[in-house]
Length: 133
Figure 1 (cartoon, rainbow, N blue to C red):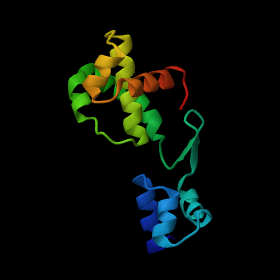
Figure 2 (spheres, rainbow, N blue to C red):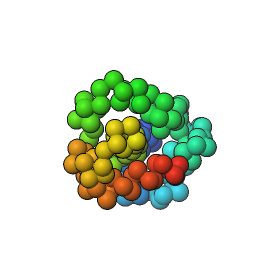
Figure 3 (cartoon, helix red, strand yellow):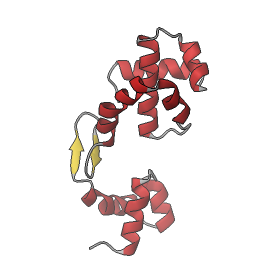
Figure 4 (cartoon, helix red, strand yellow):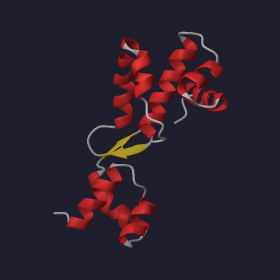
């Protein structure tokens, strides 16, 4: 059904490559990239305002990740990569909320623990707490 190029575009998109980057790489317009990718994104998550193919990744993380945090917080902090992809940021927000609300840690201490500036920690904490995504 899909051409080889289209399969490559879908694979790269699922790895987090943006439409603009795909367009430049394959010399296609953003509209054409959207047309290639949209058929696989069949479902829509109203909570996170995102399209997805099988299950909303963010909903899965919100459902399952707090259990892992309760089991071994230190291990999860060590495993958390420094990237800014949506899943990693969501996990980081959950860790910040847990450390702040349950363990009453200061933003500065949380920043040191996560190797982040404490102003970033404050932003992520309030961003999550207000329910904005």
